[in-house]
Amino acid sequence: MIRILFISAILLLTLNARENPFFPSEGEKDLPISSNENRDKEPLKRVAITLPAQARVLQKVTLEFKNLDGTIENKSIELDNSVDWHLPVFVSQTFIETQKATSSDKAEDAPAKNKTKQKESGYTTIASIKDLSLLSSGKCLKIVTNDEIMRNFLLVAPHRIVMDFKKGTEIDIKNSTKTNEQNIFKDVRIGNHDGYYRVVVELDGYYRYDFKKISNGYQIELK
Image (cartoon, rainbow, N blue to C red; front, side, top):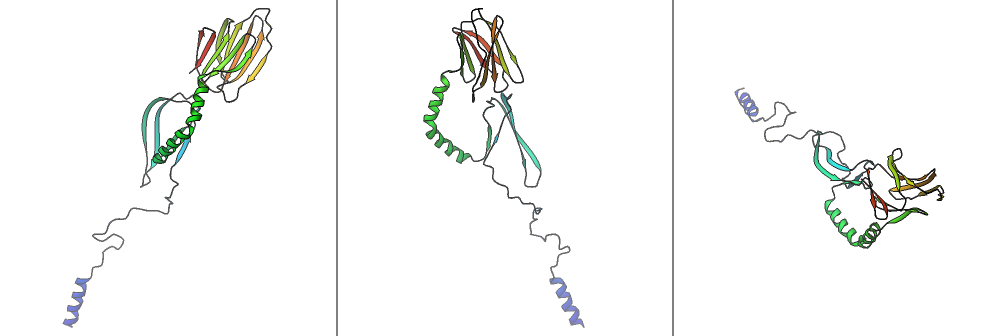
């Protein structure tokens, strides 16, 4: 009997069972909480953000992201840069690939870019009548004429610049409309009125403008 009690005591001392099997034993690391959620997301390459037509200055960029534990945070970068709303803003994480692609694109597109710069430096005639011609280059519009301007103003819905020019009684101007696709000055309408003729230039978005007299007429610069 004594032998049986002694053997039982030895066995009880050598047992290393845990009080609670649901908690890790000493030396074991806690595992992070997990779920059945599929965490495999498609890697970010590049996404584009299109700006509204009235955008002019980019002041802040904010990124919102999810952490490993599921919490949501965001980071912002303060900016103060002018932007062209015609062009998209890109978000990318392929920096090395982008650098290589940019270098390759620069080499391949150099002749095309040179041609574009040459084209942008000149003016293209977008509408013309006997005593007046309209020439555009980027955001600039030249009105080549000897006729005196009476007034100019901006109307909305759609955005358009209206110019009234004085004319002599001997001048006969026919009403005309000219559409210019892929141009900021997208439509030009010229109409005949009593004592003056009106030129209406419809724009492709929202702008302010400067109007000034030049040697051979007038010039409009969009802002």
